[in-house]
Structures are given as structure tokens and as C-alpha cells.
Length: 369
Image 1: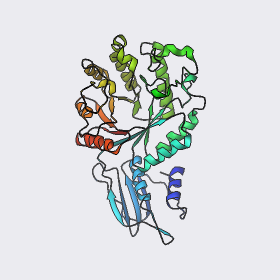
Image 2 (image 1 turned 180 degrees about the horizontal axis):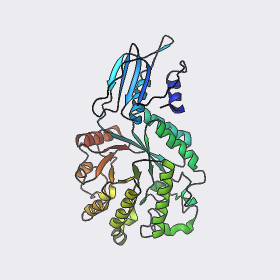
Image 3 (image 1 turned 60 degrees about the vertical axis):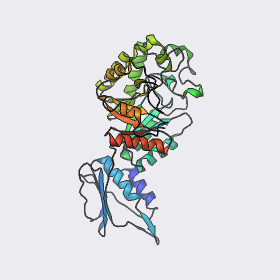
């Protein structure tokens, strides 16, 4: 736990009024004084205790210890020129084991802004940060994948280190179907083609999706993943996106190749030691779910789902649904894959996803940018 990040956190929450020395400890333990050491119960992530002899936080792992440490920090109170901690004993009681935040790094964002998001996410008790660089990371395999002012790997490494030091797992993301422009559709900018139009063969004719028939594209995406694994370090997941591939979904010939593409892609990611995560809009039947977005054809949705590697995580983004249970999420419940809900910008949308995932014991929630 002895990192500069932790020291800075303590100094700031303590208003610079204390001096703290960190001593090594084999257990996931933070304590001041000689308080009663709390005992973790069941699958609790952390436990903390403040008594007349000091304070202590115990974590099930490093992430749990950090989340308990944040709770302790937020209990510091200024009082008559001193800092006080009131007596308390408590344990975490999270219903959702996996609480993920998806951060899009856009060309308009600077490094410090993203760091602030990561720090806020840690205080809000997230467990994972999914980082998607929208043309904002320089790759060795193809320079046109990045805008000129994109982050270097050293700069991006600061974000990843921040996640780990705050007790969260950083998850790499690179969309390997739609959004191949590395932009939102409405903005009309294309990170690769705006810099080198000769690379048009890598994309569908509309430029929006990757050309899934091209061996060169598949090799390029392998290289991208390899660079991301090296940059992010050990981890459980790789988010491959795979949403909103409009040309492919409207072209029967190319659409017929999508099951094999998803099969090969997700199985490659599994062989690379990661769990592939992918969006669900193209794997949900369209026009049957109230207030939910879906673009899959009835006769191929099941084929697409079964094509994905068994360890895949299905992440269902639905931004307009406030109904409980979220109908599209419920339809995925027994698909043989772990399922996550992904809300966006409205508290009622959050509540609907959280209630559905909690009641049906799904894998977790990923709040998207």
C-alpha cells in the first residue's frame, strides 16, 4: 500500500496537518495505533474499525484494502483545529462484485482530466476502469491509428499506474468492428483516413467499420491487442467493442461472415489469456424490446452468441430504458455467458440496470462515458 499516490491522498484529506510514516506489512492491512483489528465476514471486500486506540482497515485483497481506505479518509473531520475520526465499525456490503467505469479518451481530453476521472472513480468504489483511446494512443503497428497530439505510451502508462495504485484493475479497450473511425459518427472525422486515404482498404466502404474480410485487418488488430496487453500489464479482460457496424449489418453477404469473425476474434482473445468483452446491440433481436436498442436479425442472433468464446462477457448498453427488469438484459440471462448491464446518463437508467443485475445475479455493471 506504500505508494506516493496513497501518501498524497492521506496528506490531502488530512489537510496537510499530519505526518504519517508507512511501515511494511504482509497482510492487506492499514492501521494507526493499536485498535481492534476487524475480521472480514463472508465475501466482504473490506472492514474498518475506529476505536479509542486508533483505526484499522482490512481488505480481502489490495483493491478491497484501498476501497476501505477511501471510506476511512472520507470519515476524517476537521474539529477545532484538529482532525477527528468518530468511533465506528463497518464492513462493505456491495451487491455488485464488478463495478466498472468505461472512460473514452477523446481528442479534446488532456491527461490530467482523465486522471481526475480515475481518482473520482476510485473514491466512488469502482473495481475496474475500462480505457478506450479514441485515436489518442500512439501505436507502433500503424502510426495513423493516433492523432498527432495523442498520448505516448509513457503518458498512458501514468493512467494505468494510477488505476492500479488506487486499487482498480485497468481494462484495455479497442473496438474491433464498428467505430473504426475512432470517433462518434456525427463528428465526421476519421483518425486513419483523414491522415492517409490510401488505407481505405482496411475499412468497409462507408469507412465506419473494419473490413472483416481482410487478413491485413485481422493481423493489425492482433498487433493492437498485443501492444495494449504489454502497456496495461496483467489483467482479466480485453474489451473488443463490436457495436454499431452499420454497413455490415445492412449487407447480407458480409453479414453472413460475422459469426466466423466473432468466433475467431473471441477465441483468439481467449488464447491470449484474456476474457473478451463485447457490446450486445448486434447480438440482440431488433424491434422486440421496449426502449432498448438492438440491431440483430431474428434468425442469426443465437448463431452470433454461440459463435463467441465461452469465457466472453456480454455487455449490454441500453441508455433509454428505465424499466425493471431491463428487458434486453433479461433476455441474455440464460445465454451461457457472463452478462453486464451498461447504463449511461440518467439516474433512473442506472437504477434499472443495477436492480436487474442485482436481482438476477449477473456479472456486474459498467457505467459508460
